[in-house]
Image: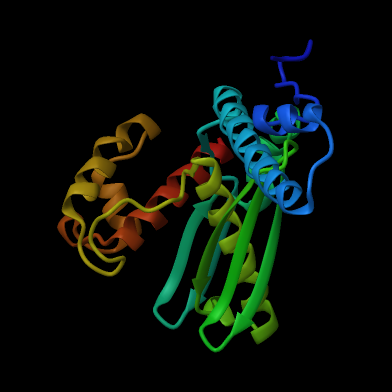
Length: 237
């Protein structure tokens, strides 16, 4: 059932058939009434789950499955310069919130801190009454010379992105694929990066000169930094 805008219409107070029959029968003793109320609550919860899942299917047809990188991080830390692009929380929300509202969804985050670091729980709720949640805990991000408060805020933002993305089944273009650690050589990714240089009017020698080491020694961090450099050069033209 849907309205004129394609959104699933909510049923009017769904009633379990046994509950309806008992109510039509007449007066009920307190014990029977309690059992019927429990049965009705369980029935309504099941109907709400069905509507949630049906609305999620409709949402996924409209919502982007991948959100592009719209923010640049560039700082010098204890291990040298760190440069990469990522999908910001604001960028993700801008891409998906209109679709959430159209399909009856809303979201909220609950952050907390303890000795383990920062924990963020994201709850995705549907107007029919059902909700689901995802929780992630991570150490406080102290990179880039952040103050303790800035580190907490940065970690909350990061975990907010990933908990919501997890519930919705979407990816941001910065989500890492399995592979070598950031400071280890990544020959496969290096070869792939080199194969794309010509499209930007660059040669392997240009890239080697920028990175400062032979292609076979490029790490994931080197390749990410190279990608940001190539992108900046393209945007500047």
